[in-house]
Image (cartoon, rainbow over all chains, first blue to last red; front, side, top):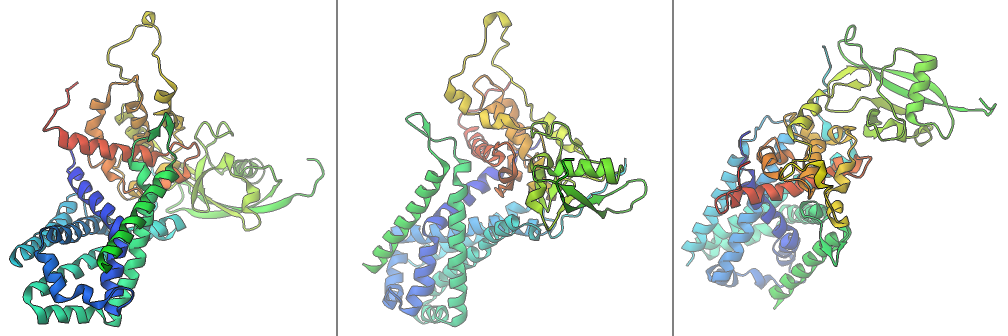
Length: 117
Length: 126
Length: 251
């Protein structure tokens, strides 16, 4: 029987799942609800200057890349399963394609984080 | 020998257990969309101050707020169910020869999430 | 009978005769019952008094043989340990176990499971043959605890009926067989883990599972197949990455 490449994908899925389970809700709350509404967190938290500083900081880059990349790997891995489960005829090989999309998004983020200085 | 195979179509609707499972899995669409929102924000940040301001303005629209509210609920559900099943991927954890109960592993996960989330919030407020 | 007035309950059964039916149909029977009657006894009443043609499997009546599994109102259950009183007054719909071909009425063709069972090498493969003269294997209570729950499987197939991944892709080895595979891998007397890894590592092995874990929910014996399968995702991952560092001995 052919050895599956699932372990690679599952590891990425697992890492993304753990990070999103630990800090996902709070991140969504801060960036998507609190700051836009000025609720609990001041609006200046996500000002251009502060976000630029974050993106130009070494740890900040890792944080942003980690969040975007791992969320994409976890999400797209699961989306593949969702589509397969409602009957779309997507065989095992398609998992690699979905991870390819996640990789593209991650590379885009990495490129942007390099370009920003 | 002739047999009959029942079709799978609509299986996820036929049992409450499967409905909750499907909800858990479909939270991934919202998590992925959120990651893309952040990615787009990064793109706009690189483009410049005006573009970034436009992105920020779009986050304050009712549609965006609704999306994030839904995403928050669904990712919370993902987190809850993630820690609920976490013990299944771990070997039996033993302390002083006795097995640590599965609910303790769940509690540890939820508490870690609450703690890290609080730390994140405090760091942002500082 | 003891003269007590008995209630009746509607038992709706899936009927399918391969020689005459193009597709399954349903037939409802009104069955008199008492509080202690199991659903299996309800089926037996139908067969003995109402309709001798109703076909279903059963044997021990005490949840150890694994024969009487079926879908009761859409939930996989053993009919011998389900009770008619719990379905009163709405009644109960009984169908054969999901995800298996229906042979006739409530009887399914379980041969796919038997193939999967054969493929997992569900027997002890010791390091070296141990002659009887050498005595028994010794195990601590903790070593027993490592695999005991997985040894309680009665091959009833409720987990296969519960598993949507098996329903969607019948190449998947499935919860029961993988739990039995793990039962042997986790047994301190066994040294056959390397031999079983090829199956574990395949798409049809543990990687068909998405942790729905309905299998563990419906298992009448507390085997927790979801746990058995997912332990081996970690093992398979370790095997995948460590093979470059420390190739396992081939057997």
